[in-house]
Image (cartoon, rainbow, N blue to C red; front, side, top):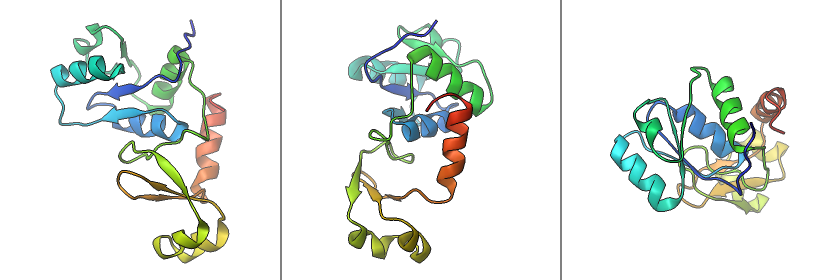
Length: 154
């Protein structure tokens, strides 16, 4: 059964760091802090209206929690996407490192912060508002998009 939610937000437990990064890359606000215990995760989920993603059967008993059964990232991503009706959204991509919002950065402002080859090969750059990490659609982007297509997330 596919359930669709208006841009759901998530919090992932300490066992789902890779899943959190992928959810951010496809455009979903996903908190991941491996120092949070189950109680803190549940409290943050309730206070911020987030769905809990967990591999912990006890934490999965929380209202709004989803137990992620699979061990491999493709199966995890597909299960969460199916459950919550997720699709890749180019306009909502978030920082894969810290979950911050990305904003467009004019090419000339990116020059001193990216490798020379990346600067020459790209016209569009983004910068994280929170941690300052720079992004562009480099050669790795084709692999990301191929994975998303294979998982029917595009």
